[in-house]
Image 1 (tube, rainbow, N blue to C red):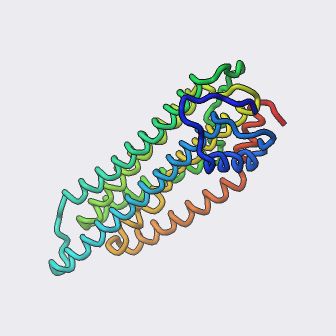
Image 2: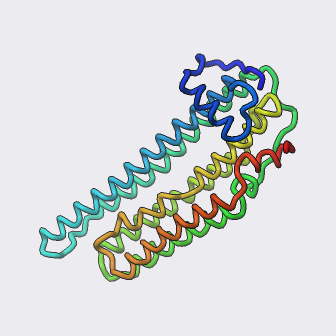
Image 3: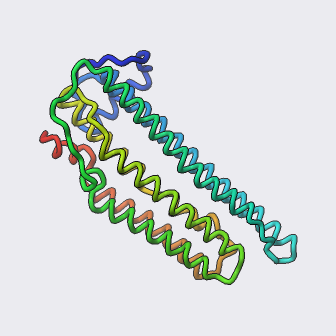
Amino acid sequence: MANSSMPSADPRPAEVRCTEAWLRQHGLGDGPPTPLLTTRLAVRRRARLLGSVLLAALYIAAALAQATDLMATAASGGLWPARPTLVLALSVSIIGLVLARMLLDARVRRVDRQAGAALARRVAHPVQLGWRTLLGRRYAVLVAGIFAGAFALGVSALAVDEGRVRYMGVVLLVAVAGAGLGVALQLRELLARPVVAEDEVSLTADVIMRIEDARDSNAPSVLLGLPVVLLSGSAPGWWTAASLGFMVLGLAAIIAAHARTPSCADTARHVVGVE
């Protein structure tokens, strides 16, 4: 792979090693990692790490809210003290998570644009990717199933004759709407993203990164665990069993989709025409 000039400082040795490992993992380890690819992969690793931290922070906030409510309920003799401010705070936290993920995605796009502008030459063959290429049918069905299951849980919580459960059902529906908006915007951006590549190898790497971005960002894992965290210990037994079953089946479906869907590297080679 030819060396690429980047407008930023030289990549750190640790980032270069990570890029070498990524190239070997995807069967592209014939040449040394370029600054172009190293920079693009580094910003993606940081974005995914921060995204995981934000998701963990949301779970912690929801668990703390659950614990606070349970203690308040116990102190009031078993009567749940209606506090719409708590629901509002949790809804704002979910919206904040979606906005933060959008900012991380914007940072990745900005680095990609800078990388493309710094190329002395760009690949002449534009690769047009559709949603079937980015996600694959199994991943698309998986995402649709997770959203449908989370939405059904939220609606069913609204039918429970208990104020707290209904309030948390609203929070869950806000999470479904927020995650859906994030997935739609990310997929739209990935479909319109220009190619950042200078040769055949970097073109294949570009397609692999776009497919990885789509599969990582469009698996709404937050919707699998949030119902259990929000309503554990307060929802009726049938609802708790349904939410646990939804989480287990969702995780199993993610594993199965990952195992049966062609790898990102194989899909990218097919798109680019490299076997």
